[in-house]
Image (cartoon, rainbow, N blue to C red; front, side):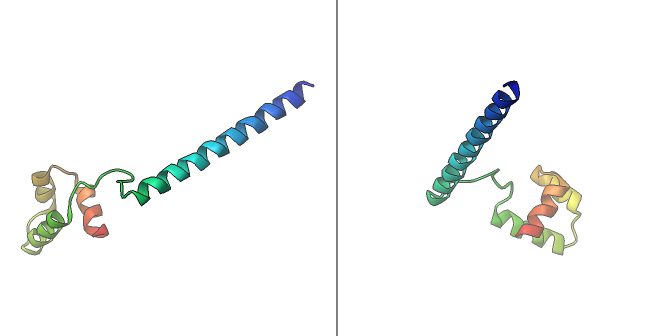
Length: 83
C-alpha cells in the first residue's frame, strides 16, 4: 500500500512538472510574438561592436578595449564571434 501511494505521488508530481513546463513554453512563445527580450540583454550593441572591430584593426590591445568598455575579455570575444 505504501509503495502504491509513493508511486501515485510521483506520478502526480511528474504530471504537475510537465504542466509547468508547458505553461512556461507557452509564455515564452507569447513573449517572442510580442517582441520582448528573451534572456539576458546584450552588453554591446551593433555600433559598439563595429567600433571595437575598427580599434582592433588599428592594432589596439583587446584587453584595453574591454577595460574601456567595462566588460570582460570573454564578453568581448563572444560579441565579436556572434556579430
